[in-house]
Picture 1 (tube, helix red, strand yellow):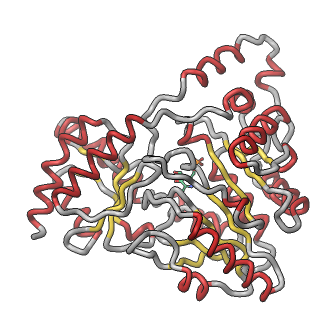
Picture 2 (cartoon, helix red, strand yellow; picture 1 turned 90 degrees about the vertical axis):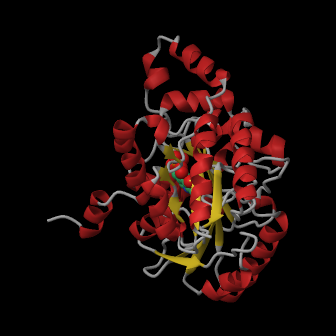
Length: 395
Ligand code: PLP
């Protein structure tokens, strides 16, 4: 006997993983140069040299317990201190090391927060479409329910009217992911302030706070001088979940943090509940070596030139062919309207040409598709004629 829910999650690969595996098989048949794989968001820019230098330097220490031993469950003090200093230097946020919990990347961080907030049996978590599909299993396995707010397909900001309609007395948190996967858009300070005002009003009405869960693995990936507001400065009941997977190109190393600022209601108890949820899930004491790297490298930012070049080549190339897309201000995704109006059928047509794109339906936004541009510039150039041919077929 085992859980049907867990079996289904394990037995059925995600659409993205399926596409990626398909791409590998096709590459063996038609040659890798004839497959244009835009499926998976695997960072392609190298980690900053200082990260690799820090690893080498830390490993020179022969005190194995110091380097590889268990750290404190919530993370090394030095790591939390370095992160707090970085946040305060950038956002004057008044963050203390005690507000930070070091986690194994964003995914287990999100799960710990959702489990900590799933105080009642009908706990509801709101996601704003288009949204990262893993929120659904994260929310349900935490014992809650994911409620989806339809996308604002005009600006890819937040449809506040629809969001208000989705709130109930069971709403515990609204998940805010900006820069957004899959849309590539950044929520403006104006949008987030209005969202904060709405949540303050509804929280007062319901008699409990509605937290914003700010899922921010793409915080540092922005272009053309676009600013990503630090949400705790705009809405006090914000919990931040951050990851170095994308910002320092370290997705396989599993390192990030949760920040529960003092200003959040019940801050200390909330922090304890998150630490407890991480403990119950076995996600404490994040990788020791990588905590030490972050203690030295928390202030580093990625060199985005390669992503920006790709972004511009696709934005301009596809725009000129007539494709409409969300404003590509951040992350490494373009979210594009399917020219035939049917994202699934269009993605199938593309797949026949070995162009691998992800239908928006899985992100809660049918009619659109996602491409991930952490790929080679050369692949982009080779893929453009295929995009053109597909557009011509739809006209
Ligand atoms: N949240 C979003 C929006 C993501 O796109 C991802 C990964 O792609 C994650 C969370 C999980 O990130 P991590 O690798 O840090 O677990």
